Amino acid sequence: MNKAGERLYNGLIKENPTLVLMLGMCPTLAVTTSAINGLGMGLTTLAVLALSNLIISLLRNIIPDRVRIPAFIVIIASFVTAVQLLLEAYIPALNKSLGVYIPLIVVNCIILGRAESYAYTNPVLPSLFDGIGMGLGFTFALTCIGALRELLGAGALFGRTILPDSVEPIRIFGQAPGAFFVLAALVALQNYLKKIRKAAGKSYEKIGSGCSEDCMNCKDRDGCSRRFYDENASTEKKKSSEAQNSGEEGR
Amino acid sequence: MDMGYVKELLVILIGSSLVSNVVLSQFLGLCPFLGVSRKTNTAAGMGAAVIFVITLASAVAGVIYKFILVRFHVEYLKTIVFILVIAALVQFVEMFLRKTMPALYEALGVYLPLITTNCAVLGVAITNVQKEYGIVTGIVNGFATAVGFTVAIVILAGIREKLEYNDIPESFKGMPTVLLTAGLMAIAFCGFSGLL
Image (cartoon, rainbow over all chains, first blue to last red; front, side):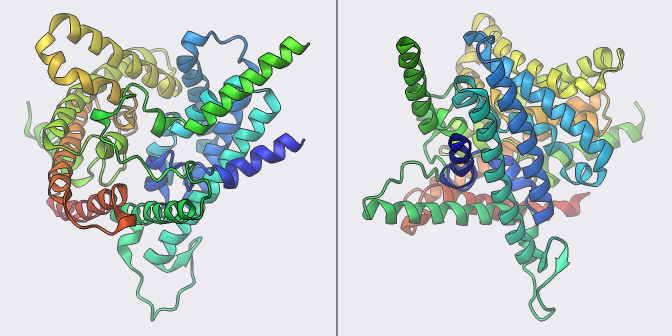
């Protein structure tokens, strides 16, 4: 069970998909107008991520290598459809406020990234907890960003006004431009932390800070591994599959 | 064609391209918006490829939805069907252009792999269904959305070219500055909401 705890810690803190790796920026910007929307989107993604990781890991020896990406997409899209129908039936208000972003969970690069870099090469239980950990990390980040924007833009938290009337809220933070400003601040903060860690001789490679390369001059245009898959995880994958191989030989 | 229909199409055209701009107010297609906006000419090429693919994809998705999914009462399968159709379509367009129209492939081909992962394409297809647009209306909406993307990415590229040699604080170099620029553009685009 130690492995499960390690995966949860990894997703929530060490490789937080939003705050550290900077993946899945479209939903992060779009739905964080309030804390409750961020929480709802995070939990919906968590459900899809955990279930798709579970199924992909179960089927990892059946899915042929060459058609794995379409297979992942079908599995993910099925769960998104199921979750969307459940939301429509039981929480219609949330479904309405998240709108088109619920079906767009399919193209959330965190999910495909975890399938490709973790679930496809690892046993079932760690994959499930990897999904839950990453989902919790995403939920945590979205709720925090949503809370920040709601506080600045409306002076409220989870719909309850908490700032006194004398403080004029900065409305722009609740609207589209505010999302860009909050993300810009987040990336600048990451750049700053990177600089500090570098100066202190600590590891900083995992901090994403977006990619300021020009895609046209980039070598891996076809898949954009930097934006869609977590590079460190794919090296981890190689290591773990090597370990698996040697383990099998040992047997 | 009656005037009411033409007016509806015009409203969609302006609404989808300027008022609710796909990148600046809906945050779809952010990856190419940030990744291919360093030079104005590549940004314009990307915009042209996006217009081509989104218009085509909304036509194909609209036809499949109306004549297959609705006909057999399996509308709930739209997410799965659309994502597969779009991925296959982009691959097919790439092969088709390479074989038959080398000149167009030369101009747009390099951008096509980048569009497969563009969430704006799927977003438009699903929006068309959610807003209950017909096939023609859906195509107009797709075209207008893509034009909005092109306008935004070309403007951003123009501003980034000007920013290239500016003295920017260390931590704000690169992505933060681009995001701040996009935020200011989003404020400017808020002004279009008075149009409708």
